[in-house]
Image 1 (cartoon, rainbow, N blue to C red):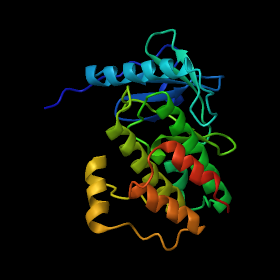
Image 2 (cartoon, rainbow, N blue to C red):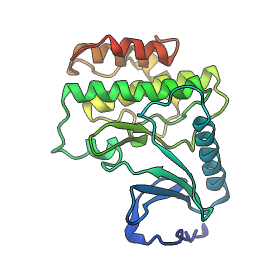
Image 3 (tube, rainbow, N blue to C red):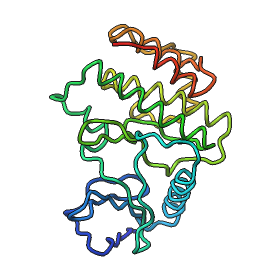
Image 4 (cartoon, rainbow, N blue to C red):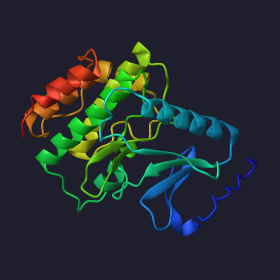
Length: 242
């Protein structure tokens, strides 16, 4: 029988403050603030992933390249030593938002999300970081529904051509989910290479209902690996119109 991991909450945090969690950590809103503390479950592998995330954020904070607002704001390591501090994204993840049937999204909003997400990925790649998990679960929405890319527990640094390609491919999957609300390959537990093989052998998903058409074309180009880098994707995005 697997041993149970008992998670010790940071000082001043109660169960009522918890706002989310994933495979490597939990997130809690610090009472009376707009700051989230992301802390570890306690498993040694999870701790290493979270240490990596902190190192990535520290690396990005020292970049001489202008930081885009569409990257989740890092506010440093927690004083208690149990995690990192991030700016609160009031509307949680994009995936959670899209899962609510009543939440409709305009074409203009989708185009804004696409540009903001691509801009964040460009910044990462310019700083030699691969995100490693570009999904709508890691795109967070603020009070004005602007995108902030976060969660670097699957990141790799320095950037390799293989990881860059995977990021750009998964960017296309994220665009598809933004546009349709559908998670391609959900529940199949496929890695990016396996997803690419499915596209290669089975063809593209149905893009005929995606509006505007230039978004469908962009998704197709990302999934078929037609771009050499994220900057090229961003250039295509900025030539699009609703």
